[in-house]
Length: 136
Image (cartoon, rainbow, N blue to C red; front, side, top):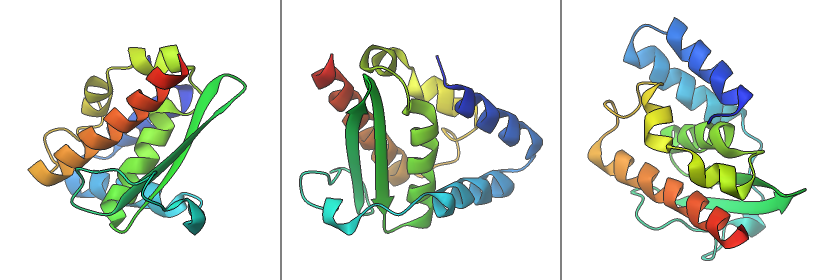
């Protein structure tokens, strides 16, 4: 299950034929995000397991998960934006039902990320899932 916004992102990626264009699009997604308040970049929101510095701040609004994030790496900021598109606005139960790897595979991300970036992405996905599991 993916959000309508994620389906639009998948359509955008289908028009981008090579990985470099997709990579740039991911970076552009990150640049377009509203900056995370620096006061939220604290140890409690830091995601361990990422090569870059990554912070994810989640909250529930009307029974649905919403999170924001920040990173010191442009591509990771873009990956945060992609995950926001995948998860924001879903209930905790819906978040837990999402097969993030399969959904991200539709963007062609799985085979083009370095091992370190892939591990970091997994850590971010796990943080979102842990947050949802606590809210169920």
